[in-house]
Amino acid sequence: MALSLPNLFPKGDAYGTKYFEIKTKPSQLKLSFSYRARAKAALNSSSSSVEIPRQWYNLVADLPIKPPPPLHPKTFQPIKPEDLSPLFCDELIKQEASIDQFIDIPEEVLDVYSLWRPTPLIRAKRLEKLLDTPARIYYKYEGGSPAGSHKPNSAVPQAWYNKMGNVKNVVTETGAGQWGSALSFACSLFGLNCEVWQVRASFNQKPYRKMMMQTWGAKVHPSPSDLTEAGRTILQMDPSSPGSLGIAISEAVEVAAKNTDTKYCLGSVLNHVLLHQTVIGEECIKQMEDFGETPDVIIGCTGGGSNFAGLAFPFIREKLKGKMNPLIRAVEPTACPSLTKGVYAYDYGDTAGMTPLMKMHTLGHDFIPDPIHSGGLRYHGMAPLISHVYELGFMEAISIPQIECFQGAIQFARSEGLIPAPEPTHAIAATIREALRCKETGESKVILMAMCGHGHFDLSSYDKYLQGSLVDLSFSEEKIKASLAKIPQPVS
Image (cartoon, rainbow, N blue to C red):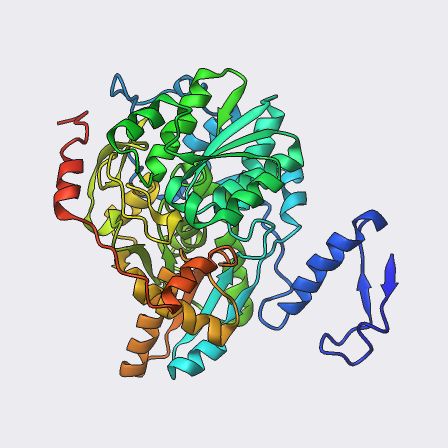
């Protein structure tokens, strides 16, 4: 139906329209109106012709050298699908091992995606002006999802596939809380029970993320906890442990492995998670075309790698085809520098050594990073597929300390208006560095940045920065050496 809104949006308003076309039931009017209003607000910054991708893109299909296989944690042999069945539902196991170039997105998932996708690609003109740079800066903004980040792009299909597999309960880990929030949201839509182990440092720093998860019906525990053997072991060694994503993964995996009616969901690192996130890059390629631009530099933050891969992988495909040649740069915290300081080796994905062994850049599976405010980046390893791409030379990586990141975040917020989550502040800081280099050289490069979420639940971190109490935390060489010494040696 067509709904006339002459009092709210008279003819000749900023949108240049008198009507909204509402294509939903009246009971859904409020939700659709909110989404449509957000879409209209982004109209001047993002192409309105771009549609939600109907397929996920699998970079593995196009790589000249395939990535090394994951290994069984006990036998050290390539893992078989049946080895993963205690943890994951069948469809996700198929996607994890798939070499198909594209995988169709189920209609039920597309229907949920439509609540916030496509997401806007925005030119940061005010930031450009602030920096007085000839560079043209664009950012792909994922903060308009219900959970406020890119994470629902994978949480929704994971919840749906588990629902189709007659799974009743799912368990997971979360760092800053974006993934836990996303999975809680997705489970609430499909009627699944959700239990989340949140890294204790973030559990204490970000109480509203916990409340958000609970609002969507999830149970939330600080990790390490006394509910699992893995958690109790850590607490015995260090009762004040700040936790880590590796520890939280161990706790969630332990619960899933011991309960036949429960499956585990992971928010980053694994191939099927990175696969789901490629809707970001697929949209962005078309949006850049509509702007008449080709990126010279693509920048994204990396912890486990889901947001970075989601934007970068479709562009790497175009790079492999010879259609463009952007420099692709990952940015990680100096306190947890797996790509820039880690070793490329087989290691466990969790602290307790319960997961398969994955060939990745790692700081050692029992490395516990200092409690920086970018909780989503406090992971000891990098996604195996990103690690492989890095080894092939298709991307580069740098690390940036958190004070410089928050300085960039303040510049971004005071020019563009959006308050970023602590994680993408790393991408912002790197983008500012690149833009200032362009100012020095006079180059008018096109810089594309991944802006993966808002920081509305991270204001305590901003408060510490503004009050001058935020400090840079760095890794300890001795700590990393000790952790790397415990990496398993499955092959010579």
